[in-house]
Amino acid sequence: TPPADRQTESGELRTADGVPILISININDPAEIGALDPATAGVGLMRSEFSVTSIADVANEERQLAIYRRVLEQADDRPVSIRMLDIGADKPLPGLEDLPAVASGLRGIRLLLAWPEIARVQARALLRAAVFGRLSVMLPMVTLPDEIDRMRELFREEAEKLGRRGLLHRMPPIGMMVEVPAAALMLDTFGSASFFSFGTNDLTQYLAASARDDIDADAATAAPAVLRLIAQAVKLAAGKPVSICGDMAGDPGYLPGLLAAGLRHFSVAPARRPAIRSAIIGLNADGTRAAGE
Ligand code: PEP
Ligand code: MG
Image (cartoon, rainbow, N blue to C red):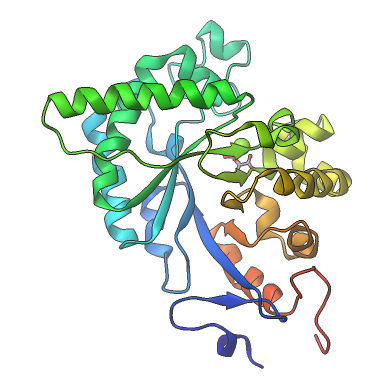
């Protein structure tokens, strides 16, 4: 069967043995939302840190709201998962890199919680943007359940303030990246996360003790350990939505292992979609190659 025949207009994609698979895209530059074709489920990861280039941007609620709103409107009712700012020493923001907290390695949600003024601005922009589409919010570099609880509380407080000001808003589902090994091992304790998305870039780096720039070289070495950790973590997810948005998802060579681990939703860079689509069609859901492929 030619690949296109197994894919309906709605973008439904199935493995050779008929198991439905979702493919979403990762976007960095908000303009990449233009790559959302009808065969794509939605945006599995928008890296919001790429939308800010200065401290002034980080403090600008209206600017962030306008960017998120545009992405949600263009997604046209398909789900969009916007990740809160993942800023740190390895993802520097000009003017911020000299902060002692950043220099000492604080990153992702820990930085947001240590500097709630930033998180509150972004939370308000996200709460207000949520009325324009199917938004969910993803938290970066989560290590402990308490970090989610604290961010949820912050969202509740900001929602209340918006309500008092008479500004339209909606509470989005709040989920987490699974990219810190300590969180992956304990995933069953993250009751307050609404969904999980595996970030294999950081997961690989922290499992393999590699420098981030050497990930490609180390990824192959660490892959069996990463795949085993993902498979274990999927079992701990207790039926909550699970996806993968790290670079491993865009490499057809890892697809058999990721399918075997139980993953059914892959979010990849737009350029990786064709290769992943055609690979999925040739595989069974347990990751074995289909007969005749
Ligand atoms: C990851 O770590 O796999 C991920 C998707 O996040 P980023 O690449 O932005 O660190
Ligand atoms: Mg990451």
